[in-house]
Structures are given as structure tokens and as C-alpha cells.
Length: 229
Image (tube, rainbow, N blue to C red; front, top):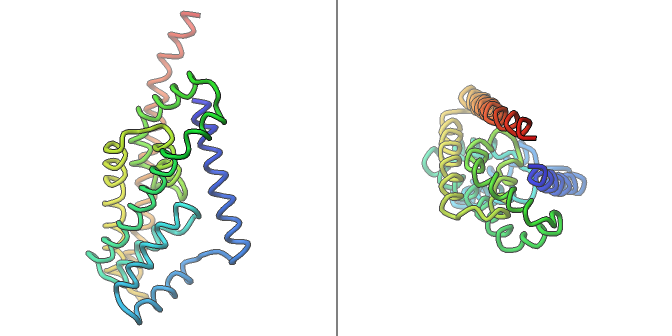
């Protein structure tokens, strides 16, 4: 478990450093800027709006961007079906990129960080056991989805298992957000506000349930190990 936490913290540090670097160099990416970019794209073609949305969501693999806000704005500018489709394209590309890059090139880094093969195997087993739930609940926090995708690649989670979990998490998320955006206006933003609050509240409640369930499962194991010792 300690090895998995070590890798998680390393990935988190990398994402935070990249994000802070972008903020220092460019002043950051905020909702007003994104809305301005989408308004500029709307003067050309809806396709440009969709590509901008997908590109921003793919960039979330490298720097933290307001994913939920982008998905909501995609619905506002493109309507529900089209906005959800382009949002899903961007989110899907980010997850695919994180998984494939770390699966192909992250193995060497993993063995540098953790030289004990038994610890690496233990980490893989832990993530293969709980990794699907981590992916499903990863939308509770920024950066966490991309870290979960990278961990899936590092631990060699089967591709079918990863993509099933990733899209089972992503499809409802982007659909709800895009629909809320499509029913909101600047004068009546209530659907979008309720969606933001509702989605984060749901994922946080699920995380609390997940953590408590794991704690209950581990207590008997800890007692058993103490008795054997």
C-alpha cells in the first residue's frame, strides 16, 4: 500500500508542478477565458467549438483545467447531444493518453521508484482490486481522474477493464453536465449551479462510503495478523 501511495503522490506532484508552471507563465486558465475562447470559436463554426472543448479536456491530462465547467459550457454553446459528444471525446482522449503512455513508458520509472519486485506486485494487486472503484469515483477531485488513468497504465490493468470503468464514469458525468449547460442561460444559471453542487456531493459521499467499507474489511485482517504474530 505504501508503494501505491508513493506513486500516487509522485504523479500528483508532477501534475501540480505542471499546472503551477502554466499559471506562472500564462496567468492560468479560468472559466471566463474558456468562455471567451468558445465564443470566438462559435463565430466560425460549431465544429470549432467542439474541437476547442475536446482539446481543452485532453489538455487536462497535462495540466489541471476546470473539466466540469468546460462540459457545462459545451452544452451551453452546442446543445445537449453535440456538447456531450465532444466532451466525451476530450475526456476519452485524456484517459486513453494517460493509460497508454504510462503502460508503454512508465514501467521503468515504476521500478526506479520501487525496486522491490514483491512491492510492485503488491501494488498491482491492490490497484487491480480497487482500481475500478477509484476510476469510477475519481471525478470527486480535479487531477484525480488523470492520476487514476496513469496508475491503471502503470499497474497494467487490463485495457478492457480500464476503458469500461473510465467510460462508465465519464459518460454520465459529461452527459449530466452538458445537459445542465444546455438548459442554462446567463440570466438563469441555476441548472448549471445545481449540477456542480450535486455531482461533487455525490462523488464525495461515494468516497466516504468506499473508505469506510475498506476500513471495515481491513480490521479483521489486522486482528488476524496480530494474533498470528
